[in-house]
Image (cartoon, rainbow, N blue to C red; front, side, top):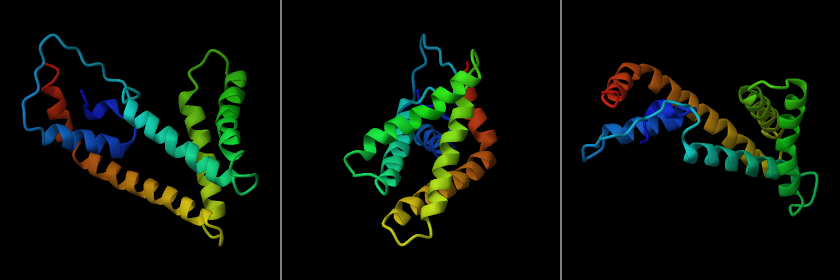
Length: 156
């Protein structure tokens, strides 16, 4: 089931809310339990990961050949995970590594946004998605009562 509370990013929460709200057929609930965990959406996780990976590969292609950039992009995402894991052992570091990864992408986007390179388009699409997610967060915040009522229907 695609309920809004199972998503981390506001854009995906809004999409889940609209999907539930506009569903044509009633959803059966017989013998089903839905766990609310923000990391339950495979589509959200994989699309954000692919988007981040492609953006990193694009930025790295400015320094190395385009064939080597995807390999270095894969390594670039593992470096913060390993460093944070070594420094903060036996802790859940998902939030911290996510903040580091998105901060590095924002820093790279800020560097290339004013350049004359083709990478300025990659940088501006990053900022466009951040702005779109911020707008979705405002909408989701204003719909929080409606979202709670819709989700409460599945808790019975």
